[in-house]
Length: 557
Image (cartoon, rainbow, N blue to C red; front, side):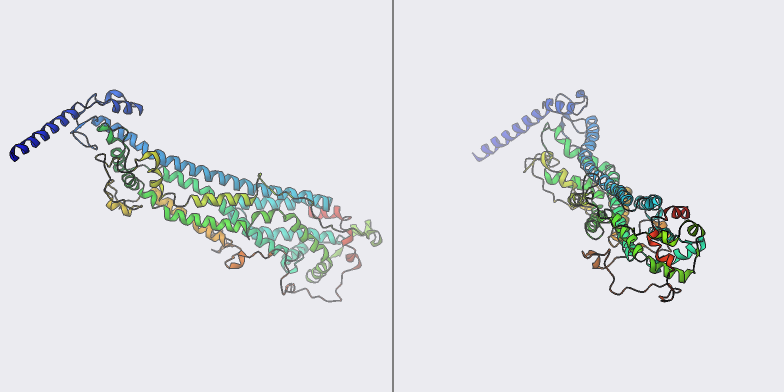
């Protein structure tokens, strides 16, 4: 009885197997033909019924709706299919930071333009023709600042430019408040050499230099970092998939076609292993990418705080006016020291012939100016809005490369649970999900990756990011090391304020506070000798400021 039962079971199994084989042979491939045709391929490539798939190179062999020719075409399609989502994500990232670069760059440039226009309007109203006839000095000042913002120390030595500006301003004002004297070029060179020691403008030049240097280095370095991001993303995203990656993608995406399961999608873990193998080199960019983003975020904090470009440029007209007021108020003492150090100048014959001392008495003076309303925006926005927005984008971009496989293997691209394609059948994927990066691919069960040959393009971009990160960190401390020519020109020294201490973060006023123990002027030839007073004509010189305008212009030319 038992023997008879066993024979019945075996007979049933044989019949089932034979019928299954017959069904597979007679498999209808209509669904495959429709899906294959929807990809743009010739529907005639697909057999009407299952054929012997012994010659297939990627997909499971046996009776199949696939042919070798179909495998080749679907391999090309799979190359596109795995590249498309990565390309889309990369394009979005490029667009995001290309826009932020344009916004920041336009904002900084417009701030410079607005500051120049504001100073011009203010000085015309405040100093009148006295400013108009010397306006090229201030025009050149802003042109130099713009060139420094655009090209850095390769185009403008900021310290030297500022020193020349103050020396030129002193020379013009010194002539103005001493119109009763004639000054040779050699005499004015003597005056210019001692500008820093005389401190005719108070502490404004020193503090403005620190402020401008830090703010400009931070602004231009940050904009440079924003400009670099789309370039790096573009180069990395164009790295081609390896043949083994394309083969694995073909097996994952299109081998279900061969068994007629055109709607079957891959298991999530299976997809992760394939994509981590395909994007192994890109994932290795992540560490340096994150370091770069951290440095960018650090510099944003500087832009919001002590290195705020907007707070430097917006009130610069008032600061320069304050410097001029300092010179006016101390003109007698400055002139006295110069006359002792550089010698007593000759009286001006032209001045004596045109005016007597009595006629020259004039009660006018330079007027301090406080504008009623100042522009609070540039390029239709403010620095606070820009920094708040870009910080969110920078934080969101962190770990972009290492999370690409997870981003791709999500949503409609994968099948949830165990009803998914595992590479051979509709079943659970049993393999362990491997880690990101090239080194981890040695144990990837689905993609053959040569871990001894890292991608050259991606390695070069890692180096680019590392270099930019060092520039950002230097800018965080107020130093500019981004131009090799700067180092060569200065004997290898870095330019900048050299702010390394936590004091850079304080909110104290670093611009116009009085130093605790102001040093005496260091010009050795000058002594505060009571017998060395200024002549009566000199004491009246300040009152002659406006009246001596024409003579100043002639001397300036």
